[in-house]
Length: 157
Image 1 (cartoon, rainbow, N blue to C red):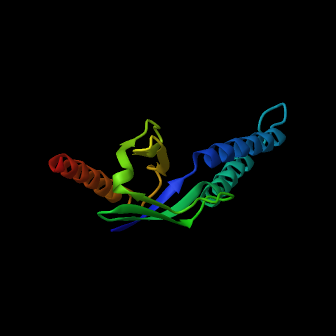
Image 2: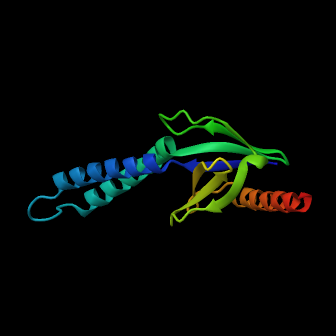
Image 3: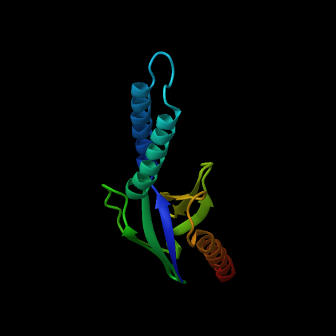
C-alpha cells in the first residue's frame, strides 16, 4: 500500500514562528503611538495579513510531502516535496531492521519514532491539527505489520 503523508520540520517551524513574531511586534510597534492604537481596522488588517502570509510561509518552508509504500519486506519513504533548504533523502527500511515503532511526547505533533536494531531512531513529525492525509491509515498498517512480524519471529524460534 502507498500512503500520502504530509510532514513538518520542527526546526523550520520554530524559526518561522520567531521570525513572524518579530515582524508582527515591529509592525505593531509602528502602529502603536503612546496614546494607544489609533485605528482598530488597521490593527485587524495587520493581523489578517500576517496570518495569511504565515499560512503560505508555513506551507513553503515548514511542510514536506512524502509517499510511504509499505509491504511485507520494507517501508519505502519517497519525498515528493522536501522541506525548503533541506535535502531530505528517500529512505528504505527493512522490517528486519526495525526494533519498535512508537509515538513521541510532543503535544502538537505526532512524533513518529522508528527505533532500529542498530540503536538509531528515525523521527518524523506530523501535524495532527491541520493536516488531512493518509497518516492514520498508515499508522494502523505500520503497527499491525510490526506486530505480525514480531509474532512470526517468536513462532519461528
